[in-house]
Amino acid sequence: MYLVASIVVFAIYFGNVALGAFADSAILGDVGEMLVLFAASILFVVAILKKEADRNANDGS
Image (cartoon, rainbow, N blue to C red; front, side, top):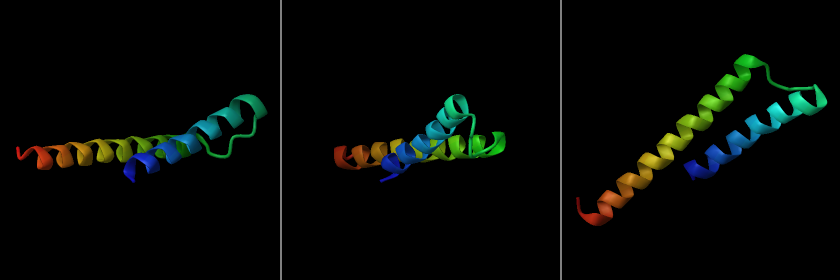
């Protein structure tokens, strides 16, 4: 779930950057882009940590 959320948030970031580069009509400003990319990074880290915790629980470690 967190990995999918991370991909969706990163797609929003990428779409905004693409709009700014090709159509010159970016929706988010610099701070908005930073916050969206930060949210994608945090969601990705949470997803990786949950996967690692699940793997450790299944291994009995």
